[in-house]
Length: 218
Image 1 (cartoon, rainbow, N blue to C red):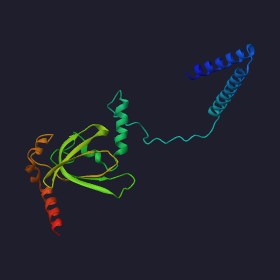
Image 2 (cartoon, rainbow, N blue to C red):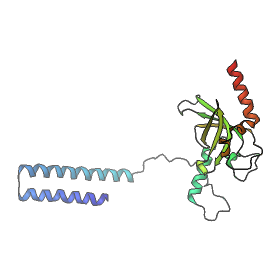
Image 3 (cartoon, one colour):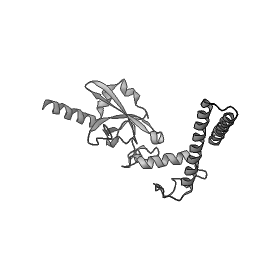
């Protein structure tokens, strides 16, 4: 497309020069002169750009973050998108939080629905000291690779509050399991929205509510 445009502009400039020879006038002379100047400038630019491209100048080549692509040994024909996703997860997994979202891991070592979770997040990337914390019961987990997320629910001042966190977000500073849930058989605990009293049956939330109430009295 670039060569066609250059050839077309050159032909138009040549046609204007021929027209100026046949019918010389002041307007055509100025148009022909401007077209010839543009043609010379364009040819000079192409000549200098090809010369700099062929010259051996030092370029900055970034070092690879991984020595080899993250390909599983059992994969005979690896999918390039899955490899890119694994590398993105390995790049974002700073504190080993990916172990909490392994589907086939033991229930004691992974995050499950019904667990009481403490999450600390940064308010902005510019100020790492300004953080916000939230504690709640995990009612849902969405395992979507690098877009993995989970929902926490708590009752604050008799109002149900839900927060959804992206597991591999750079704003999420820390994820900690305070208490493992017991007696929950479902993967999605959306029924806690209709029965908020069951949320406070967990010991960790009771302790946090009591400590918050004592802090307000003092």
